[in-house]
Length: 165
Image (cartoon, rainbow, N blue to C red):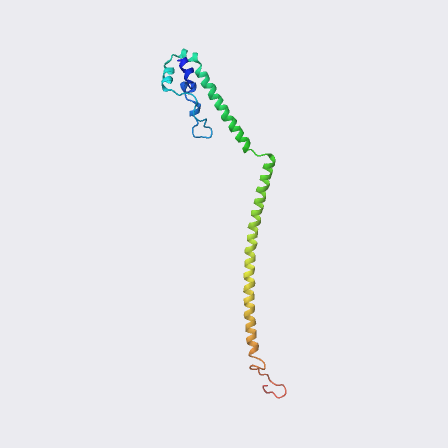
């Protein structure tokens, strides 16, 4: 069996359990296709061997070493990505400053909207007062047109003659 495995470049991890290339297919951690042979017949032959003969080949040791290497590679990738996510103290300071500025601007906008509401109320009151003033001016004009030389004068009593003038 050993001569056949060397000759065919059989995947030792596949014989013992699962090939690491088959673990993460269609993910970012995909290793691609395994360059070694995955043979069901050789796997069945290997599993049929007695335990001492299997230990003699050392495939299980290679399998565990390959898995440990893959785990360490994944951990390195995770650490690298975590470092990329971490912010520097300057970035944290800038972020906090921007968040505070945004909060302050939100308060300013809310207060401004309240002022606009009050200003709108005042504008409404001024427009109402202007309309009332215009109405009173029209009344005054109408009153003054009906009195005086052009209109009917009010009669007054003459102090000397005691008659209406």
